[in-house]
Image (cartoon, rainbow, N blue to C red; front, side):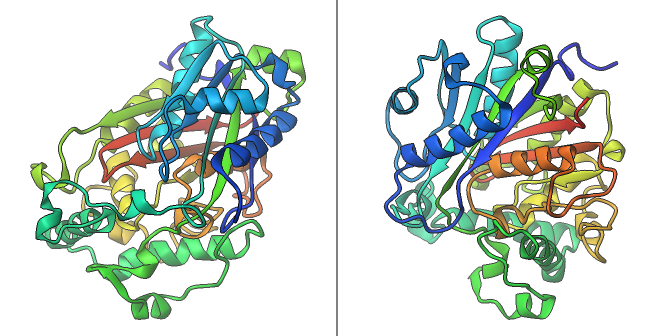
Length: 380
C-alpha cells in the first residue's frame, strides 16, 4: 500500500544554466539564472515562493548562503536554508520540501544548487580526505578506487564492465546539445585512457563543471490551481547514510543506497521492475554499478554483467543517465539527474525512452557516505 504522500506533491518547474567553463560567473548569479528558468517553466511568480532550499557550493562554502541567495532573488522565504549531504543533498532537499509543504509550513519551494569549480577553485576536490592522506590515500578518487578494487576482487567485476557505463553515458551525451562532453567514446578508447587511481581510468571519473540547476516543488493541488499541467508527481523518496569512512567499513561493496531505495520503493508501492528509466549518480563508474545492485535491479555481484550488451543504453532493459550523467553531461553533483528524470516523465528528453511512465533517480554524497532516492511518475 503506497504512502499517503505518494503523488501528493509534484515538481512543477525545472531550470538550468549552461554546463562547462563559465568564466566570470559566481554561484549566486548561476543559481539566480537556473531558478528564474524554473519559475518560468512552472508559471510561478517569485513573490509566491515561500521556501528556499539550496545546496552548499562545494568549491567555496559560505555561511548564511541561502539568505544571500534569497536577497539576490528578491524573495522572503518562510523556511529553508543551506544543505550539505554532499551530492545526496538535492533529493534530500526535495524530500524536506515535500514534508514541509505537507505540514503546512510553506506552499511553493525552490530547490537549487550551483558551483563553479571549473573556473573558480577546485580546492574542495583536491583536498586530502582523512588521516590516511599521509600514506598516499589522497583525494576523492582514491576512496572510490579502493571500493572498485574490492568489488573486482570480491565479485569478479572487470574494467570493461566499468567501461560499458562510461560508453553508455557518453553515447547519450553525444545526442544532448546541452551536454558538456559530446565526443563519442568507444570501449577501445576507454581502455586506452590513462589511469587516475587504478582501477579507475580518466573515463571512469566525472567531469569538473560550472553550472546550476533548480526545481520548483509544490502540491499537486496547487499545481492544478496554477495551471502547471506538466507537473511531475513525486511518488517516493528515501535516504540512507553511513558514518564510517571507507577504511573503517566492514563491507565496501554494500552501501546505504539499499536502505534509501527500500524506503522510496515502499513509499511508492513500486519495485525496480516497475521502473522504465534510471538516472543514477555516476561520479565514478563503480557508483551506478553498485547502485543498480543495491536498488535490486540485479543481485549483488551481478552489476557488471547487467550493464553490458547495451542493457543500459537507449533500447535496453533499463536506459541509464539518458542526458549523459555526471560522466558526460556535467559533473555538477546530482540535481541535473532530477531534471532529466522530469524531462523523461514529460516525454521531453532528447533521448526519450518510449512509453516511460516511471523513473528512479539516485543522489550520493562523500565517498558513498550519504544516499538519497527519488521516484517520479508521469504527469496526470
